[in-house]
Length: 90
Image 1 (cartoon, rainbow, N blue to C red):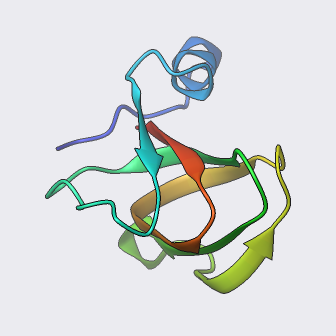
Image 2 (spheres, rainbow, N blue to C red):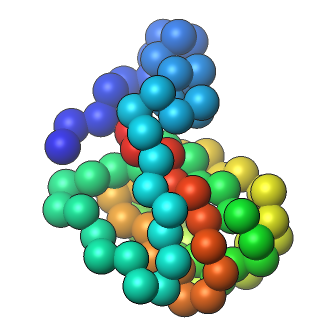
């Protein structure tokens, strides 16, 4: 799935507010092939790993994120070892 570029402010805001939808990700989540994510928002304290899209930026590896701390970027995968997050689709 191709993501929409966010060079235009309106594209960024639409993705940040979930216009493309979101996934609730827990440790039982089965990844959707080719899906990319723009924002990771923990609903509770969560241990998260995320791979930065196309090796741009850093990856997260088993990072503990508190509830409601949004992490913005473009991620090709998001996994949760514990807790629950919303991952907004890019």
